[in-house]
Length: 84
Image 1 (cartoon, rainbow, N blue to C red):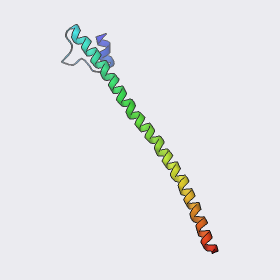
Image 2 (image 1 turned 90 degrees about the vertical axis):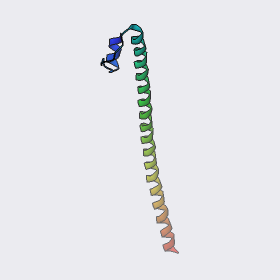
Image 3 (image 1 turned 180 degrees about the vertical axis):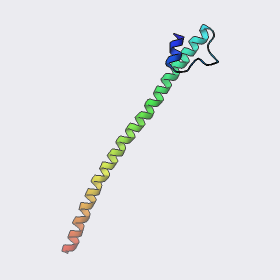
Image 4 (image 1 turned 60 degrees about the horizontal axis):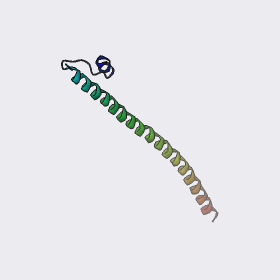
């Protein structure tokens, strides 16, 4: 069990390693906790990037609509100035 978790977490065996059962159990929980923490952090970072992209696309669309409305308003204003 210890060998598979060390391999799964890509910690490696290195020069310092668990000698007895207590150390192995502690290391197993420590490595699994760190995998969970890393997954949580990466998930939150991904969530920020995805929502940021959605907001960026929404802002670009808003600016396109706003620019179109502004262009139309300026065109109508220049027509009314020309007629008067």
